[in-house]
Every structure is written in C-alpha cells, then in structure tokens.
Length: 607
Image (cartoon, rainbow, N blue to C red; front, side, top):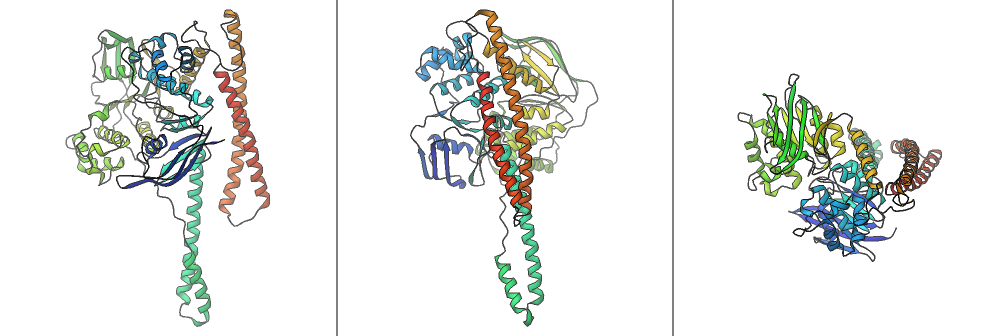
C-alpha cells in the first residue's frame, strides 16, 4: 500500500473545546476505515479537514501524489427537467455509454436513466450522486453518513460496491452492520484525540474492553500494594531498627502509580412508560388507498395491527412507506377506503422532519416543559432530560446551539414524555450515534405499547420488530417471514435484476470480469450462464463461511492466550508465546484466503 493522505500534528477546537489535538495519521491506498465516535466528537469535522472544506487550527494536511478524492454531494444541483443520464454526463464529462455502464451497478437502467432527476425518489437520487462521484474515478472515498435515508435496496447495492471497490475509503456511519460489512480498520474520534486500530470495529471494541479490564485489575493490584506498604510505614515509622526498611518502603510507595483510565462518556438510559393494553386490534385498514391528488401510491390495503405489535414497514424508497405512515397518522387524508385506530389509542409521531419543528431560540428545558403533558411532575421532566444526557448546563442551551444528534435526542425525549400507547416512527435512528440507537432499540423492545416504524438500520430492526409490513408494487401487505429472510429476498431480487439482460442502448448492463454475456446466445444460454454463475457463487460463499469458521476458532485460541498474558504480565512462558505466534500466523494466512474468497464473491455478484 502507498500513502495517499497524511495528517501531521493536526488540531481543532470548537467553542473552546478541543475536538482533537496533534493528530498524526496516514491513510494508505486500499484502506477501508470505519470512523466512529459519539455525536459531537468531531468525526464530520475531521472529514471536512481531510477534504479541505474546513481549516485545521494547527498542523498540516498533505495530499500526496496520485490522490484522487471522492465524496458524495449531499445537495447536488439537478437542472430543471434534467434527466438522470444527462446529469451523470454533465457531472463526469464522460459519454452516455460510460455513465450508463457504471450506473448499472446501482440498478440505474433504461427508463430510470431517462427519467427527470427531480421525479426520482430520494433513494434513487442518492444512487445518482454515488454514480456521479465514482465516474470521476476516485481512489479514496470520504463518506459522511452515506446510509442516512437510504432504503435497504440502495444500502445493499452500496455495500456490494464498496466491497468490490479497488480504492480505499473512510466512512462515518451509525449503522454497525454496514461498517461490519464494509470496513477492515477503525478510527475512533473522541476524548480530544484520534485513535487508529488496524482491525474491524468489533475487534477494536473487544480490545478496548480487554484493555479496560486489564487496567482496572492492574490498578487494583497497585492500590493493594500501596495499602500494604503504607500500613508498614505507618506501623514502623518511629522504630529505629526498622528505619532503613521504612525508607525503602516509602521510596517504593512514592514510585507506585495507577494507570489513568480514559473517561467513558455516559450512555442514554431510555425508558418508555406505557401500560400494557388488553388484546385486540390497534389499527385496521379496509380497502385503503393512499397517495396524493392525482397520484395513487398504493391501494386495496387490508391490514390489521394488534395492540403491542412492533411492526416495521419495509420497501424501497418511493414505494409509499412514509405515505402510509402519514396517512394512518392523520397527516394526509386517504384517497379511498378507511382506517380505524383502537378508540383508546393515544398516538405519538416522530417523522423525518421532526427537527424542523424545533424553535431555534427555545431552550432544552423550555421545549421539554412544553412537550410534557399537563400535571406531569417536574422531577419526571428532569429525569427524562438526564436519561437523554441533558445535564444542568444543557438545559439552558437554545435548540440552535445543539448538534444534529442532540436535537434528535431532544425531540425523542419530548415525544416519550407524553407516554403514548402507540408510536409512529419514521427513520428514528437518523442523526443518532450508535450508543443512543442501541439504547432506543432496547427501550422499544421492552415497550408495552404498539410501534409502527420505518427504518433501514438492520440491527435496530432485528432488535425491535416482531412483524413486517411490506410496501411494494402499489400494495401494502403483511410479510410472513422473519426480517433476515426479507433481507435475503431483497439480495436475491437485486442479484436477479443485475444479471437480467437489458435492451441495447442507454442502461445496458455489461458484465464485468469473466463469463459470457447472457444476451449473446439467446434465452437458453442466458439461463445456463445464470445457473453456472449461481453454482460458482454458492461454492464461493461456502468457502467464505468455512474460512470464517476457521478464523473464529483461531481467534478464540488467540483470545485465550492473550487473556493469560493479561492476567500474568510478569510470567515468561515460551510455549504459550510460541502458540500465540502460531495463532497470529494462522490468522494472517486465513485472512489472505478470506480476502481472496470475498473478492471472488464480489466478482461473481457483478456478473
């Protein structure tokens, strides 16, 4: 690997607080780095400094020869009436066929490429921005929360592309599953410093736990030794015959020091109060049609949600998930049919635009007081503020001084103060850091009320949802299988769409790598080609699973050996040292094979 980007002594402060100080970092070609940290820690600021969009207070950012930076324009300007293919041509300066070939990786084909950009859903517009970025041929991507507002299909396509991308990237995301599937190194921003770890996020978190446990154990031993020697000094301080021993103990006592433990930021403690409801329906729809004047999004909806159900609404962006949620929330009228809520249902709504409802000058304390129901004790309001990490000083802050994550926490706190029996949540994890997302998921899992929510955060959905409602092809229906099955179904649909032959011209999918073009020999050869590719793909996936099992076994052996050395730091055991070196070597060899197998899976997926 060759270095592409270097930070030397980079420091940055904001509002009198040091985000990071004297950071030295080298980003090499091909590195795949997950950038993690709490909201407000400085992750986005670091990326903006890397891109040259914000100056550092001190230090240098060196962009080395050969660097071609790429980033997603979150607010790309689409011309009036401009089509998708015209936008890609304008942004990249490349011919239509080249734009169409790359766009096909994101399922942007035929009619979609001929559509006006402004008429496309948010998910497809994001796909366009991703394609435009990649057409500039970058070798280092800088992506800040690229998964926000992406539907599952686009998220899976982005994951697949990143796994097969030949360059490197840095990604900020609150979606741990996404980081797990795409990144092999970790960069944590927090506590006034930036810490790099040459391994995936899960390994980094495990190592932090091990280091903390070892440090705490070491400090306990130091405290015990200090207490023992201090007791000796106190007992024999005035005894002439023990004067030499007392001086020796005092010198050793003065040298004893505990290891400073890095301050751990508090984690939200989210609790949702709601009494369990008697059995029965919470929501019932009958021949419901939803949409807007002149445009029906879905129709013929017959659905029943039971009290206490936690149902996730899934489907591609633009299919009608938010429209369905807004309709049953009473925000837009149905086009036909009817829906009926349980008469005693009190409904709380959290939508994608909830932050827009904050009053810029209103303080945190005033907002929570305004959100709380009449008669709720002041102590309950303050307890909710504390649970969402708003301390005494934070209560006086106006909303405009809060970060996006803090504003999202504030809106959630205000909603949960109202103790609703039904919660309608549209993308509730956007703007939240991992810790708050996990706390919210755990709270909703224990919540006795009814939840109907939209989310593409797979970990969050797996924790919270016990039912799935799918919006697809103009209909809304119950999906009868677990969420893991739905994700697999989506992957298979995308795979089938990627391998399906298309008409000549704009939007043609050209297979990459080896294999025959299924359009060459007619339908029969297309089916044979697809069968062959599926068989090879299954074999490659089995090899990947076998390697992962072997890696897990060796990793377990290594962890046991590392635990021995942590617990016996002064013991010399050459046999265990040899076993540790053997485990390291085996893991390194297996990782090489794993990367090769992963690349083969990616290559076959793109055929």
